[in-house]
Image 1 (cartoon, rainbow, N blue to C red):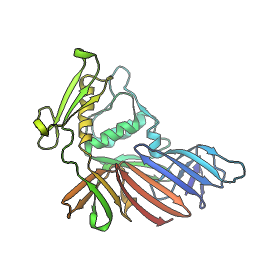
Image 2 (image 1 turned 45 degrees about the vertical axis):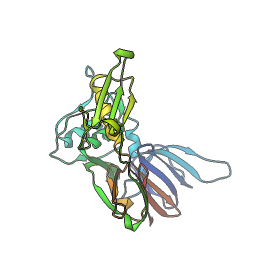
Image 3 (image 1 turned 180 degrees about the vertical axis):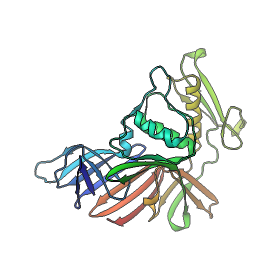
Image 4 (image 1 turned 60 degrees about the vertical axis):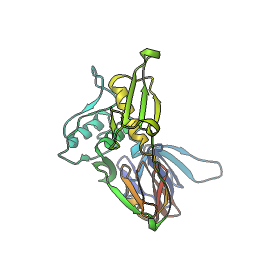
Length: 318
């Protein structure tokens, strides 16, 4: 592991690490005997695993210091995307290779602590961020819309961020212990309840069509219709509509898979998808990777990726 404080670099050999990034967790704990300075950057060379030290904890009778901090992704979760003065929303337009670095710059995340922020060229997109969301939330929504991901690296002892299309990894069910549950009928009629009271309340209806996509026209009726409500008392208009449509799309991803698969987790990124097929059960399950976990104990690095109820684990000597 490498530690950088200012321009000073040092290498740590004896340490334990518990680090996670993605949805729900974006932090780490580093245990070592060495004296490190809060504000230092730490990373495992050649990997996406790193962050910034925010605090240190010591205990009487122990020489081990526990350093806690935010991962690279955690820094995104500590920035808020604010609408420019006089505008209702922050909007990205044009080629993503230019607009994405500009977004990070507008959120005061460049040039420090990140170095290069790059994106595939030739892809244009107009994107409107929700009001006063975190940079992590805004990027997560944008990546989901365009089928991309962002990955971390190190170049010239500085964290880098690359935006690129997400990848689907096919996993063979016969090579692992697995349990699958397929839900045949999901919510297909979502009623969004927005601002207002009683008859004056903003209400939006959205449906799932024959092709499985969100639509304004009802397709399922009778016993095939599955309704649900979604409380959004702080939204109305276009903002309410977008939130209801996003929630209904999310509700379609309810297939479950529990997997234990040795090998390959290090090459899978947050934002990628896992596709698992069980020919005997005539079932396929696809799930988006939402979190990655890296743990180092006794010199061994263990990497896991999680998506809802799906976990893939790999262990390699470090």
